[in-house]
Image (tube, rainbow, N blue to C red; front, side):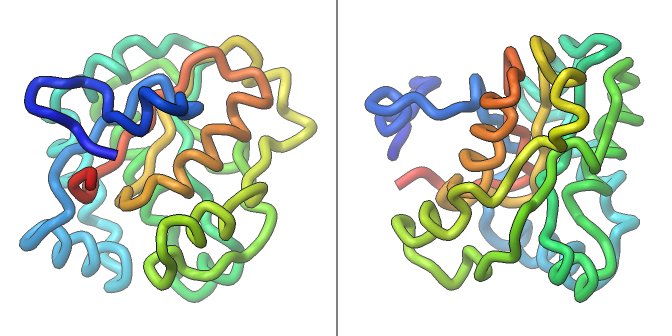
Amino acid sequence: MGLASGELVCTACMRERPPMDATLAGVPYVYPWSALISRYKFGEQHGWAGFFAGLLLKAPGVAQALGQLQAGDWVIPLPLAAERLQTRGFNQSWELAKALARQSHTTAKADAQLLLRLRHTRPQSQLKREARLANVKGAFQVDPLRVQELTGRRVVLVDDVMTSGASMVSAAQALRDAGAAHITAVVLARTAPA
């Protein structure tokens, strides 16, 4: 999966269309960003969410994606498994999603309960690409009692880091299967496409 200079769609996405309509990133997942994000994520420094949201809103396309949301649309974080949430104490993607919604002044709702994580999975960082895809396949589902709230709506799906994209693809597929009309993935940092 790679982007040639000036291309807006990676070659892997041309071969097999992902469930996201767009994927936008704020910064590359390299030093010093990788170290700062690690401190935010694992150092219980969720106050950095506001700074990171401001940074994201300056990235190409992010403010526009949030600006296209209307009342009834959604800003949704990638959910953590209950075990990981208990260990970490907070969901860094939820903090980031709330800060993005607040700073962008969107009329869309930010919600951490619409998309559910059904099961605990191994940390993606420990796996190769194919194993990552299998690890999160079927790990997400829209709350069955709330599917009608998503049907025909636009969604901005938020996460902190995107490496292989497996978690984002699996979560976006659950949203698409539940009837989301348009999904933009917004990530704070992304590894360079290979």
